[in-house]
Image (tube, rainbow, N blue to C red; front, side, top):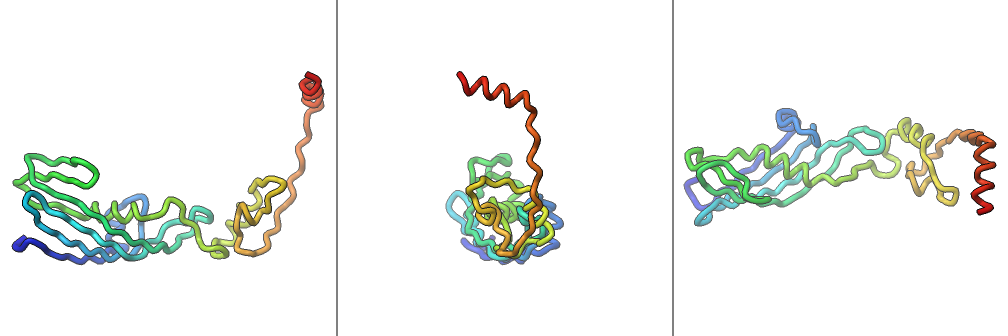
Amino acid sequence: MQTDSAKYEFVLDNLYFAHIDGPEVQKGKVNVTLNVKRTSRAFELSFQTDGMVWVPCDRCLDDMELPISSSDKLMVKFGHEYAEEGENLIVIPEEEGEINVVWFMYEFIALSIPMKHVHAPGKCNKAMTSKLSKHLKTNANEDSDEVFDTGGDDIVIEEEVEEQIDPRWNELKKILDNN
């Protein structure tokens, strides 16, 4: 780096995510702006990521678009051998003199994805939500739409047959109730 600061711009597309082969994101289009600033003892890398990634919906498993945006910093300094000295401080050997930021960009993108990602109400795969609703267990005083939002669509739920209780258990319950 010839000056005290530099700016780099990257467009991360499906090909990038395929080469990274990370578990969280397989498809997307993300713009990354990397500002590198040289300080007296280290380099400060500032990443600004903005774009869309496609992740599976937690409810219906169909892919969904998820907007992401984050600002992250990474400090890099020279040393004798490679080391991670904290959450955002990397030491690289002086003889290498460079750092590959490809994986760091992926990590920043993955960390900006919310823990829970579901489609907007009414956008989930109808066949899957219908199957899920058949297995949904609710309390008697809860409305099923509060527990599992189906987007206002009427879903027919088959009534489950009440299990037959072994009469011996009823006799044991009577004994417990008398004590």
